[in-house]
Length: 167
Image 1: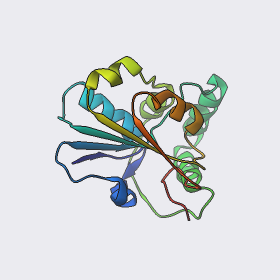
Image 2: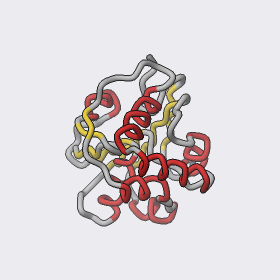
Image 3: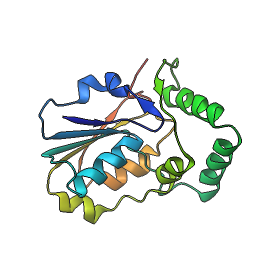
């Protein structure tokens, strides 16, 4: 199994043990890591029989003004932006300590402006599972679930946040 961490995170795999398969041909990505996991499977950098996308970053139906606001906030104070991002990821529940990595503006731009492509996803011809939290304050779960509904198995966890935690 290969795991791809979310934006600015490392060692976040511990939050998702119950959603991960141990098969060596299983690829799992959380949030921004879901984009990177998909890209690596698509480009055949990693072999996969199953792709699990946990709270995949999905902003293609999000207003441009929101994306620009996020970029401005990051440029103004990167550390405060990451702190708020992680806090918002755990809402509506108490935030947890997570390990952060150094990030770049280009990574945030990639996350915000990434366009998922159904034809590319279908071309993988593998099992795809998408798991979303009903109370996710980061990802547009309504748009994401609609987008992935005919190409993946969708699970929406009631009252779960971006980290798929319910408390």
